[in-house]
Amino acid sequence: MAQWTPLKRDTLDSLADEFLHNYAKGRTLLAVDGIDGAGKRPFADALAERLGRGGHAVFRASIDRFHRPRAERYVRGEDSAEGYYRDSFDYELFRRVLVEPFKLGGSTGFVTAAFDVERDRQVEMDWKTGPQDATLVVDGAFLNRPELRGLWNWSIWLDASDEQAAARLFELDGAAGQSPRYAAGQKLYLAEANPRARASAIVDNTDPEHPRRVFTDSC
Image 1: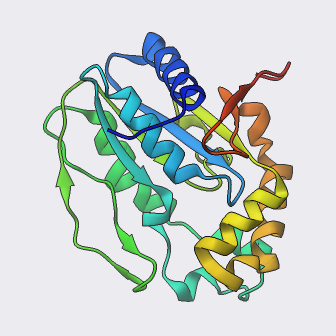
Image 2 (image 1 turned 45 degrees about the vertical axis):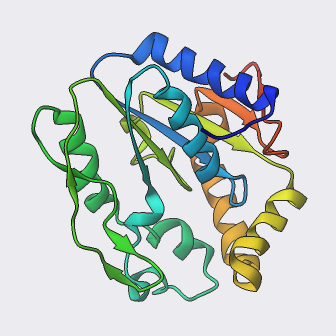
């Protein structure tokens, strides 16, 4: 089991308890959204662990495992913000092999990863099944965009300072993560979807060891 600071454990447990209070039964979906570099994947991993601490079935997925091929992602140019926001992910495939079969429940199989972005190719489909009561936690960029907005029972928006987010991106992706494509693509998303206002909960994750929930009038 992971070792966390008391504040991190308290924040995760509070979010998990609130979610399960409302969505303990049936097949449910929870999104962890946020700016690039906010720490979405490790936060989602930790939250999934806390959601499952009482025996609740939890599955993990990332929208990063549903990328489109490179030729489609960069058709507008490698520095295109529109390309990053509009062309990065295969939402039709995401719905068809993961979201829709997961929500059906029963013995219907679903796939939590479909594309290897580093090798630029599809991966072999690994079909999973689960119990009737289960939660799918999905992390990634743009999860509250208009065409995905109705999928989630709950969503979390991760905030982080610009400096901290940029440092994380550099650590993960080096100079490639500093392309104007990403920051400008995020601006398009924020302007079009206003995801922070639509989130069920907002968490300041500037310090990933001490995340804290933020309450605003828009929550």
